[in-house]
Image 1 (tube, helix red, strand yellow):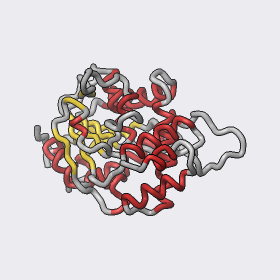
Image 2 (cartoon, one colour):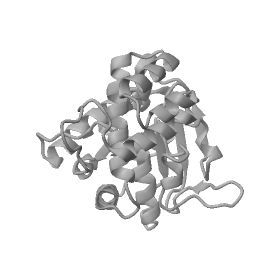
Image 3 (cartoon, helix red, strand yellow):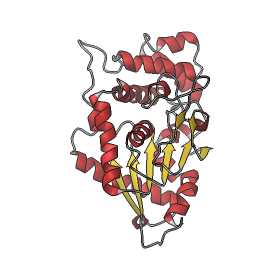
Length: 291
């Protein structure tokens, strides 16, 4: 599997939430994040940046045209009913008391954010901002199986893989859902490694039961490794509230390694840069980059 140091490892990266930039063109966003992700990845691997040929699938722009709240609603709240429904499912899986979990549908966001912040010893303000951003974008993607935004997001991933023919696809957070569906829809796209990080793929009701294709099985439905993926490795920080329930391999067949390892203290455990630079990512990619 080792490759000559003169030949860079081809990678396509698929981002999570929070990457929408309305002031820049898609080309500018791809270029800027290609530099950032390459820097973080090379730092963790301990190799020069030139050993990596990383391209960036920027799908966030496809999700920005979802439904907007009517009237003078609070911009700090989740006005989208689907976003609130997904939030309630997430809170239930985190083990929130019923009033808190069901409150995801009706209570002010600060109430549910406060419970999450206490449970994970997080900053309450940052937790509220993260929850609002995360569930808005997840709802925009998962609104319907045939939604135009969902298809456009998948096609951005497909286009980058088809153009650059990477050996490795690295996906983070919501990007793991987009990459999973895109690769299932196009089994002709063959890659050696799918590396998912901080993934919510197994989250019941909110994500798992909405995947395309649907997980199959009567007694215990399971998702599956996309046909064109030779190897699938998943990395999750044990304190990452997005990567739940833990142990992705329990919900998906074909996961070769399901690694649970701390990537950063405090709220940094879900940031892409920390997953990219962590020891588990370096150990996974080392053989592919010849390190």
